[in-house]
Image (tube, rainbow, N blue to C red; front, side, top):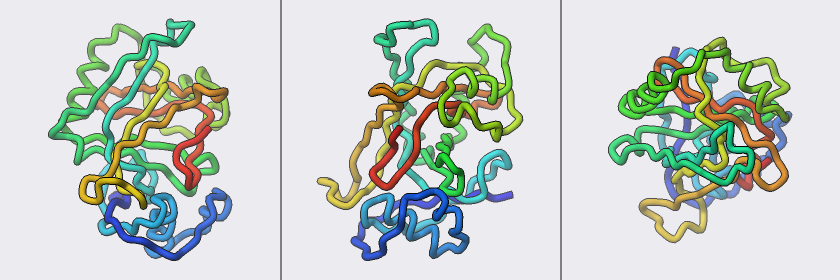
Length: 222
């Protein structure tokens, strides 16, 4: 089954869409999703639909941006000061996405990796000498809003670490570079929220488990 995620073009728009998930869940048509994308990107309209052939992700999502890098902290690092940067390889950055599900009550985020980026992530999975556990197990470990929800795919994963920051690149109204867009970094719960756990499965897919984040029109929040 094909899955879809919208992405970028630069153009001012006039529509106003609420960021209330209860209202967003009523969206059904392509036009509805285009409006959601436009509002989330502060007036920039989508110009393309990308298909994503993965039965474990939602039918329709809104692209947050091109996946750039992750900052993770070891689960054993109690002070959470030593961050490790995981960067998507240059040739894969335009083929990997960060997207969210506007129908989910907590606007869950998904990482959609290119084949090359998945191979890189699979090497991480293979190198970790730890027993894989269900994704919902790590969601409960992380806790908070997403950790309380028992609606994760039935997939076993290994934890990479606490996801402290996520970096993506996209066009939003007001970007300095109208051609390439801008890089955005969002802290995933450091200022009073709960950080999710970044995990990886045996195929190299990355999953975000638990945490207190949401995705209102202002950007990723918690």
